[in-house]
Length: 286
Ligand code: SF4
Ligand code: SF4
Image (cartoon, rainbow, N blue to C red):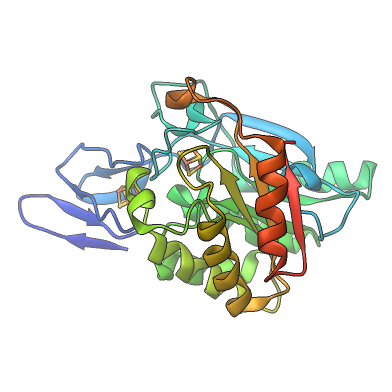
């Protein structure tokens, strides 16, 4: 997923940003860079956060309820949402946060050990920052985790090119993909692309081995109208009316600390709008 350009420059093709990187340069996600004329996933195996979380926290509402997952995060993200609640790890590179290197075999061994102690531990979740900016680590861990008979969970903004999804989708047992807005213009404000995320959702929904849920964070003044939620939910239903949607409440964070929280009645109202199209709609953070 690298295009070789002239004078040692290379173009990363993992996401629609298509960063053209001179030797030694790092991409907009801060997790991939040009090392000796090759695009390298700098965030590979560099873990900033490690915790055992309930699956409901991912959030996954309709996949192995009551189970837990070993959750791993690194640093970097190809989006730059001004409301990011994980900006301490998503909006920094290798110098901006503490990390330690973990090999895929260590991840699988730890997951197997935790599962042996408590069978409710269902597998590994790739989460917290954007895991797909180092998708090779998801692939390599995912294969070993499956060999242990455990599951892989992907929590992602889904804004990557189709060949990345094709590479990891067969290994993913459950996914929660953000659908941040149904406006291409608003997506651009966050550095993302609605059309790309729609493609990811369609691809994962078509995978019979992957349970798919979607999250929309309702940010005041950004994506909080009945009209937008109606369009978003109608499109999701056109893909599969059985897709679970989480309508989630914004709390002030990062560059939007001056905004108030989303009103709880509005979150409930927009969830009701979504229920006109979808069977499984949950509210979150209320
Ligand atoms: S994954 Fe990172 S380096 Fe690659 S194109 Fe996207 S932002 Fe640029
Ligand atoms: S996609 Fe997620 S992790 Fe990345 S900036 Fe947006 S909210 Fe933060």
